[in-house]
Image 1 (cartoon, helix red, strand yellow):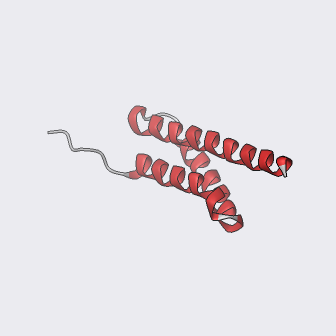
Image 2 (cartoon, rainbow, N blue to C red; image 1 turned 90 degrees about the horizontal axis):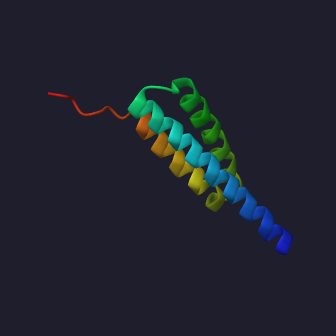
Amino acid sequence: MQDLAIIVTLILGVEVLVSLLVVFFAAAYRFRGTFRRTAMGLTGLLAIIAGWLMGQEWRLGLPATVAVLVSILFMYLPGRSKK
């Protein structure tokens, strides 16, 4: 049982780290205008991972799904108009 708990903890830890990386690149694209292709590619990859994890167990896929939504909002939400 302890081995299973370690595996699940590692899966969640790696998922959260990858999610933070994706949100970082999306924010860099939003505010600096760099890493456009990297942000889009990583967001797509994380969306595939989130879908797979949601199909397995929805609690495992929740952090990745939230990160995908945040990164999409960072990349595609229009900014304020400068007057």
